View 1 (tube, rainbow, N blue to C red):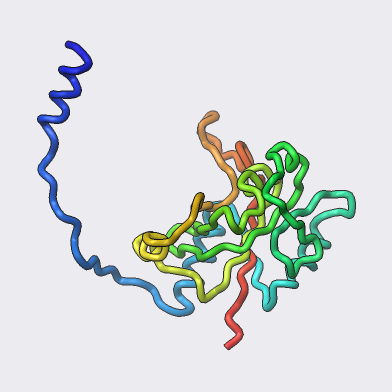
View 2: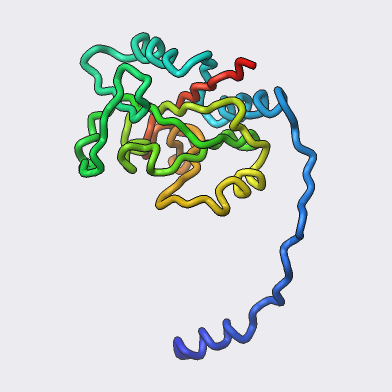
Length: 196
């Protein structure tokens, strides 16, 4: 059978299209329950949550966990290891990054994922090439599920964005879970608590 015949057969045997539901309803946790669910999921997928009262509290964490000779990188201006980016950086320049911290747009309680776009990464490769990854999440920016998440990003204007959930992991080798197999070995969520 020719390629054209195969493609024609596929085209002529499409399933009947149906409209998406207009208004999906879910039982969603609210308030503190959303935060607790998010923390639970981050821990379940191999990450950790550090609650902070202000962004600058990340400096203390960094000084306690990383030595003076290790490369720390962040586009967050409030942090002591703030790194100005020109946009001209090459990916291999960040190969020796020990710890990188980024501010997210929001987080998702049902799976512990965070959403970040390239304008908050400094360099697109950084969240994936660093040894240890930190993500700043404001408590008021935690949504319940991916349906809410896609409502947030559906009409947003961005060049590149990604959901990141926990450190890199694989269970392909002898069915054993290995963290840090293809990217960051750890992921720390810095949860900026509501102060009102």
